[in-house]
Length: 227
Image (cartoon, rainbow, N blue to C red; front, side, top):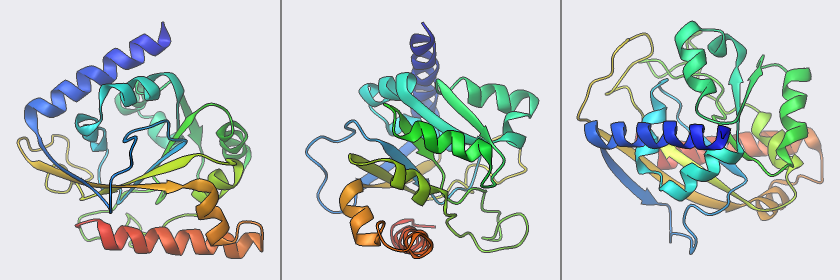
């Protein structure tokens, strides 16, 4: 029953997104044979707005069904504590897990579950880009190391990297209402997790492996995100 409720909510949000926005979507390189297959990780880069759920408009129904049944979404505890926003995000997936953004027990709980039959949905930068291109503390938007921990915990399968074109033209952090009838841009890339981890040296020095993953995803973001 919980899966059906999640699915109906996501399907409704897809309808809303399709009614009020247009989508420009393409794959990096040749698209995979099984587009929107049984991915283990969905990583969304270039986090610019709490309205990124609008990208559900470009997702096919079979993938929405997978999110509804297997989605594991690490979310900042301060976000989930917000009265309306927190409730809204808790309804989008069956496993919305509060984290403190520190390497503590909340993050360990996410890592422990990453190897289960779940789809980990994560925004690797861990915070939103403001209108000046920096985070709210005035720092550059770097990729944090948590995604390397998640990939290390998953032995095989594929990761879908979604390169957002940015949503500041729809809603800048702090604005309450989005602007309608805009075009939302997304570039997609499928990555084999085991091959990727080997190329990043996952079995070598842990600190160097984490640094390589962060640097690589930042380079990919800067290459494939239009803003």
